[in-house]
Length: 255
View 1 (cartoon, helix red, strand yellow):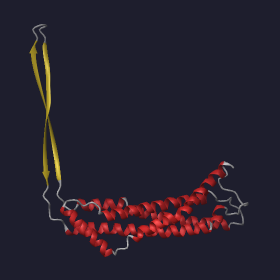
View 2 (view 1 turned 135 degrees about the horizontal axis):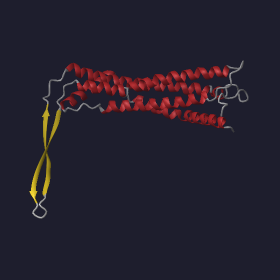
View 3 (view 1 turned 60 degrees about the horizontal axis):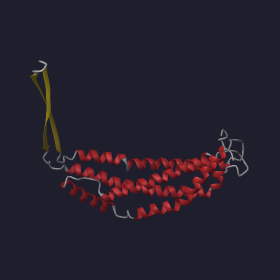
View 4 (view 1 turned 90 degrees about the horizontal axis):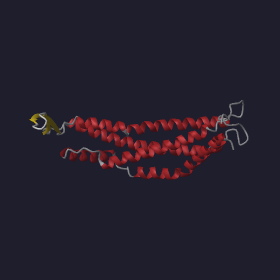
């Protein structure tokens, strides 16, 4: 077996492994979604209560149930996009030499590759929405709420002294440098201003949108992955050997 054939076979084996494990991932995403069956009104109420309690204690961390939802959606979506990339690699490493005629298998490859790419790119956008973008928006909203803040200022003052003494033995002067530093600390605490109700509503809207985006990402990942696994499984022979077992060779003949 040539290096090219070994590399191609390795990609096939990895894709087959992904397909064989797909029911487990699909079941996991379905179980996660089944726990997110509350109405948006109920979720909004829970988030609002959490924010009110947090404002009183000056602690506006992401509510635990929302944090868990975002994390589950992110992890599942990343796993799906990773598996899609593995399938894309398997297909691209099995493109045959371009020639006249007998290109139906290649058409199947290109069609499913397009499906894989579009799904992966759409899910990548959703990952960004429930990742850095969400936390950045939330941090900016909290910063504008006017919560009480405590600042500590430390002042360091250096002092130096110089003393001279006469030595009777060698009639030489001994000069001693003396130095030290004084530290002082000042604490300032801003008074709690009346929280801007509109700012609180903005923060609530940001958290609620994160929940909606996380749930939407899970649904998209589940639906897209089910469709991909179904199409790849049904067309597995054409994807791995578009010209048939004896027809055509891989485009990676440089190996």
